[in-house]
Image 1 (spheres, one colour):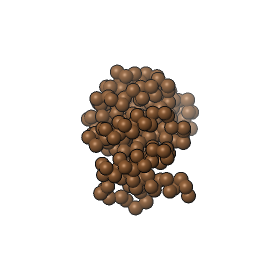
Image 2 (cartoon, helix red, strand yellow):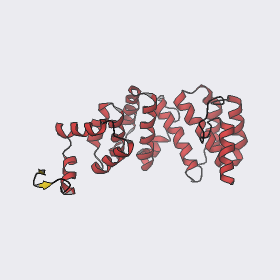
Image 3 (cartoon, one colour):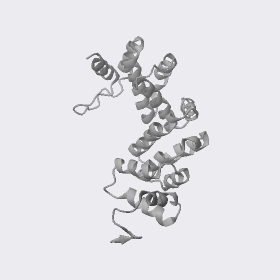
Image 4 (cartoon, one colour):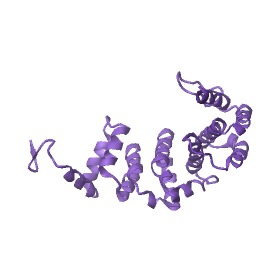
Length: 236
């Protein structure tokens, strides 16, 4: 079949890019939603679509407003990180309350990995969210602190302050924040030996995740075991 003078598969790549530059049209936007919401669409497909679009902040906000999981995942990938202000992040975090917990956390984690850690201004925002009222923003603060340690970088000099907060606040934190705080304590215990015993003691005292079932091949979230297993891996 001939489409616009080209046979199937022969359409020049620049014409494909042109379609996405005009994504503001209702038809193109609906076509994009159809691609995203197909039962066969996987996360890898969303990444491929994002590469086709590249950066389009206006489209990202439109996709975000749709509210569904896949459109929001794509929105995260094509946002302009330089436009992620505190006001916008407050709105995005509030919007995420409409998503189921698993989806909410996956969207937030993609936002962290693909946007918030990529610019000095957004990193500064991240580092200011320790006491935010939004559980999502506080989770992002703690998950960022964990990432700083497991990615092999020299840990920042805030570990003692973090541990004071963990010992004081982790037991009563919201589940999504508590998991990230526990993960941060684990990364501190693994990568900063001088604090290891303190992290193990914290895990023993709180007993978080101690009785959770652990799938074969997975590492438990219970701090003493998590730290022991991961330190052993580093030594082997």
